[in-house]
Amino acid sequence: MSELGSDMLSVFRIISYFDALNESAANADAIVRSAALLAECPVGAQWASGTVIRYGALGDLLDESRLVTPTAADPAVRLERAAAAEHPLDSLLLDRLQHALRVATPRSAAGPRLGHPALLEVVLSDKERREDRVRAVGLLGLDAIRKVRVMAVSTTSSKAAVELVSRSCPGRLVHSVAVGNLTAVLLQDDGDDRQLADDLHAAIAAEHPTVLGGGDRGPWVGIGERMSVYAAPASWKQARRALRFASSTGHGRRAVSYGRLGSLELLAELPLKRLLNDPDAARINAIATSASGEQVVATLEAYCVFGSLRRTAEEMHVHHSTVAARLAHLEAEMGWDLADPMDRFKATLVLMVCRVTLSSTELAASEVFGEKF
Image (cartoon, rainbow, N blue to C red):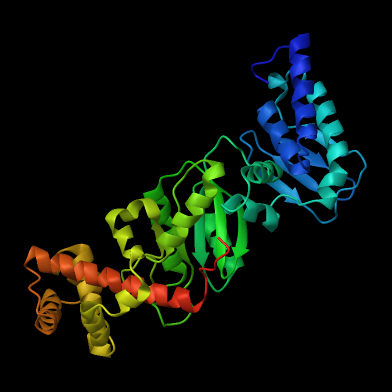
């Protein structure tokens, strides 16, 4: 609206804008959101049935109450604009919005609404025709210009996990849907991959501090890269590959971004059977079966993360001589010299293999990687 005047050409552009929405079979959510983007201020619609839809100036969902399906009666519509910022064509915009909603309401009640799982499945699937994905993007009210990222979440409680993810994300959670035993989360945000993964890891670890095998491990999250909304299937695939690297071991990562993996992503190419048969990983896992051995392996994990005896000792709340003794015991068991760069690299790699093996084994047992996507 800031680019429009009060001339007849501006009037025609607003009318054409809403006519195009009706011709595209947009639902009520998409229409209110589009009106907010045009108006550059929050826009709301409320039906006598109690339904409320309200979007912000950037297309963010501010309010959604759906106690009753919208009725065919005209909704009350409003622009939340300061008096000093009123536009001469605001009344025309409201009139066209109300008309468009009157046409769309029966369609919205009968067809999929915002967040409908079937529509999100179409957006995420690379087996659907492009024109079907384009239509699903429109019906979901997604901004086709803004990039999206997809997350793959493995959890025992999808609702709690999505709420935790929503609290931790720098942008607004757009949609989520159950896909087999995974939850797919689609997010439109402008955040940094590394920061998002760090924030999610910290939030999950704080809420679920237990390690693997010690109760509810909490959610594991694989994070795909940001890309065009029509490339969401590629981000979804990346998210599922990154999920194999999530772990609840002492210094494992609960949330892993695909873009941060780099060459480590090559481990995802290895079959689980090959990882299980790695001799060094098998020996580390065997050491960790006893209580004292578990402490030794945890100390190695911490040492590989923090890089020095004293820092490792501080983080583990033990004396640095205890750290040295545990590492010496493990060096003797594994035939390593952790002062040697090659052996330190090998230790870090073996620990990563162990984490991927543990996580992949649990994910495989849960059958989260189905053929559907």
